[in-house]
Length: 75
Image 1 (cartoon, rainbow, N blue to C red):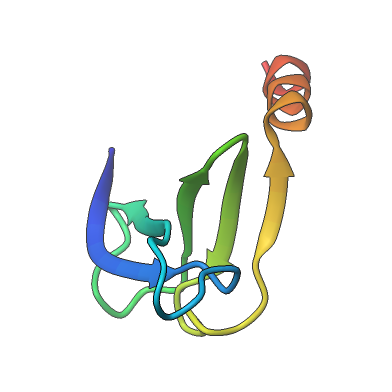
Image 2: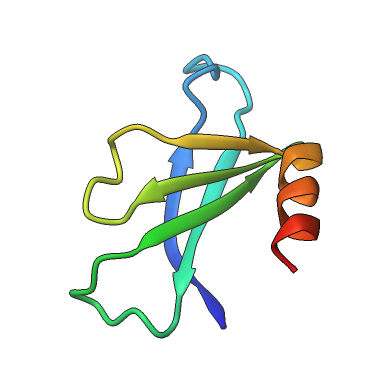
């Protein structure tokens, strides 16, 4: 099961005066508060993945077609 961490991140493309898009990062409920894990967030047509220990660090972006292809092969 995946649950929301309640952490929001403003898009770096948003100007300070304009409307912006924020992401809701989620991590697996199995991974306690001190576990090493990844967090996921949906953004338009991609799934974003980041290290929960370094939320401001790099983010891996998986476009939806790539993610679907991966999921089909992983079955």
